[in-house]
Amino acid sequence: MSATKEEIVAFMALEFPQTKCVIEAVGDNRSTLSHDIGINELRPGGTVSGPVLMSIADVALYVAILGKIGIVPLTVTTSLTINFLRKPSAEARIIAECMLIKVGRTLIVGEVALYSEGSRDMVAHVVGTYSVPPQHV
Image (cartoon, rainbow, N blue to C red; front, side, top):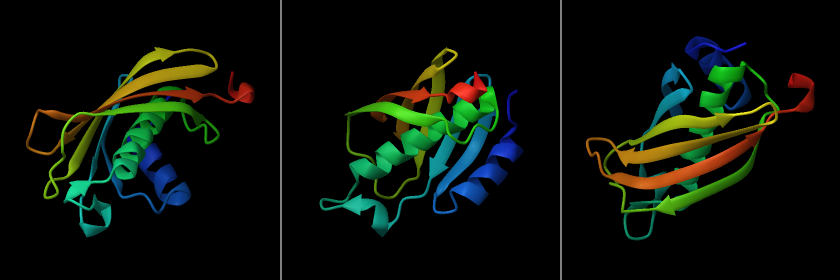
């Protein structure tokens, strides 16, 4: 029932062509994504905006889940909590490392660590829950 990286990349290109997230790896209840940072991702003060960081984390969760349960488009976010820890670099890609914590029949919980590329200091920590549609169960 799982989906490969190639299947998820093709699905995301078709259904979410607006995303700037790049899927680096998927599998084993995990995903790694990257996202280039440019002027459109910055807020005043030269830091990556919160909505951009939340979006990257949300996509990383979705990708890890699709890697686990297969392409189930109507799997949706039910909650997303983010803790901003430090200022991300305006000159480095954001790297998202996601790990699924609990995969249930109808709810899946995961966490995402966000980093500025080149640094191991986490810039944000995210926990999210997704709902799996009943017809999939």
